[in-house]
Image (cartoon, rainbow, N blue to C red; front, side, top):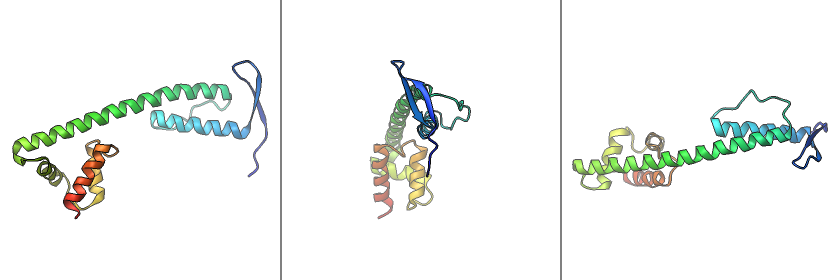
Length: 149
């Protein structure tokens, strides 16, 4: 594939003239689109097509702050979901399950129609916000061991 070697001028932090090729600019826009999707959940279609590399990098910095905040909020949410599920297990034990294994079995049997279907097990974990957590992986293995022997 042959790329257009048109050069774009921009200034770095020391006001030295720098150059970039059309390919580098295209890659920067692609990264900008990816980062916007990571930050906000959709690809932005409104970025000006005449942004300089410097302006794109400034936008990278802004998006990075949003992405870091989103990661932290997601981590906190997952911790809350884990605590809520552990509380559900404890309440189920108090209601007569007797132990955590029985409580988990009761909860799973009440929500999953086919307990040997891996997709249903993953859907169960997703509904409880544990699909991509270490605790969710532990629960998944316990469910599989319990029902999919």
